[in-house]
Image (cartoon, rainbow, N blue to C red; front, side):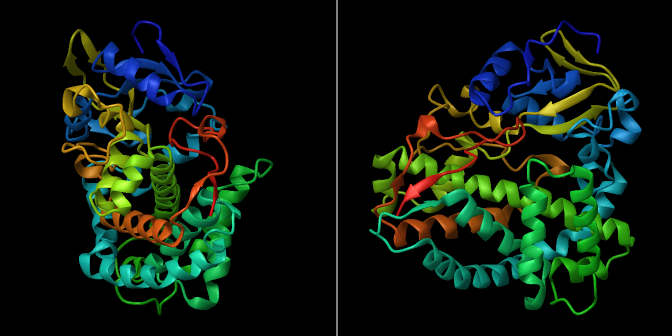
Length: 396
């Protein structure tokens, strides 16, 4: 990359991400950064530039076709497999349209309504397992509530038979929260093999498995469609719920406004997406041609781009001078937390529904909910892609 040395190194993943984003946003429309192991990319954090580039046909997500530096990136690089897998996330042009269209039916309004019915039946049972209000039991909202609910919703989306749900949830957990000593390649291989076993006729109509089986995709494309749904849907939904709970428990006056009916749960979800989005930096995109962004910044053909979607909602040019402040009562909550353009998250309505349902039920069941550990002492996720607390222990 023929640019000045990177001003930011993402070698402290998870730490001070909002501070780093603000620095990058001020520095220019795109700024060179060093990712893990010295891989270089242009960081984009301004709302208007994010919207512009995500709709620009000169920007691709296909590393195999449009990233000349790929052969020099070690296969052991943590993001390598994610970037080279031929999934809908990494497809470009007509190929992306074909893969996305094949999945679209599973996220129709009719199916989302069916998923909502199942979700509302499931939430009270899960809340029962967390304990009794006022018992002063300590539970981890992230691990024991948000993550479990996200995994069960994926099972519903897929149309997994009841006899295979526990096994499916175990595989989802191993894939999205791998053990530190686990072999990533082995985990991926076993996950794909299991997902392949789910692709059998008999799934409910409108389910993702049924939708994929009726499509013209190859078996490998179907398996990867399931895998990318798990990899994207579970961490982001888990993080959205967790970040919202943390925000409310550290802003008690806003929590009172919500529980008192003056602020909606939908507003809480949107403000969390704006101010503390679970996905902060989405890797990677690639310039198919030179792109002049102004201010002396030109992204050259073949250079990599990392989209700071989480930073877009905190852009003061869009959401005012107090853009960094969580305020569920604010009028303007403009963000790009679900992405933008042709790659905008296909499961956006389901993500919002899951978060609103989970949050309203949690605080209704446990009105005295409070943090069990001071906020400053809570561990952060060890990644620059996702943002939030690695655990969120609360007193019920």
